[in-house]
Amino acid sequence: MITTILWDVDGTLLDFKAAEKAAVRNLFEEFGLGECTDEMIARYSFINEIWWQRLERNEITKPEVLNGRFRQFFGEYGIDPDLAEKFNQRYQLALGDTIVYRDDSYEIVKSLKGKVKQYVVSNGTVIAQTKKLKASGFDELMDGIFLSEEIGCEKPNIGFFGPVFETIEEKRRSQIVIVGDSLTSDIRGGMNAGIVTCWYDPEKKEIPEGYRIDHVIADLHEIYSLI
Ligand SMILES: [Mg+2]
Image 1 (cartoon, rainbow, N blue to C red):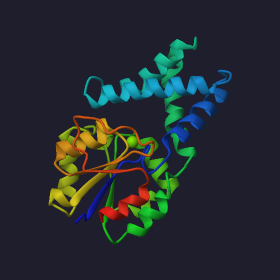
Image 2 (image 1 turned 180 degrees about the vertical axis):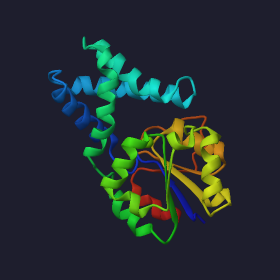
Image 3 (image 1 turned 90 degrees about the vertical axis):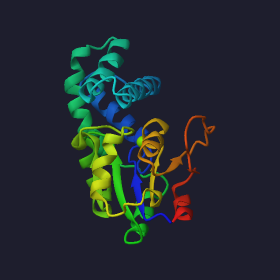
Image 4 (image 1 turned 90 degrees about the horizontal axis):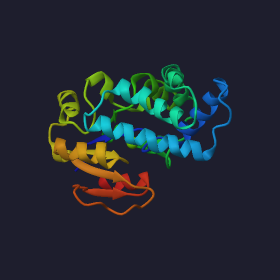
């Protein structure tokens, strides 16, 4: 029986792509960089994912990700790469300006409050996630929030989960589930931590090999069947 849910935020509880698109678009205007087309946003989004995956593999540091992705993106479109740092600083806050819930995530988390323990487990930055979790109301619903930047280690590394297990009440790993959209950080992290894994796959992608995925859900409402 699951007593504890570890929720990923970006792309799971919240629609990250919507927030990302609005933030980049608005900042292009603010910085006087002209129009940021859908094609450019898609390219940025792709570049961003590659940089985050390098962080998950511990190849680079988070500041390198945050600035490097924009340096690469700007470089490809003839924009001064030196703008990256300033742009990223504004971007961290701008990400929290657009809150779009995935499925009925707010209502789902709210309805589970008191029935199971719920925690946020996120690799997002403290600045962005703090603003986002407050604006979305999740900060009041959760029993705790674990951010990699505060822990000093990213999902999927086991080092991320040590402080989580020390803090949460449930000590039986088989009663704890991690729910997330990322195979490389959430599912791999759950495997490393020896807890139950639940892949949120709304696009119904093919189930890949090499992962222990205990549950697959295409809609967050399916979480009730695990409890
Ligand atoms: Mg995610």
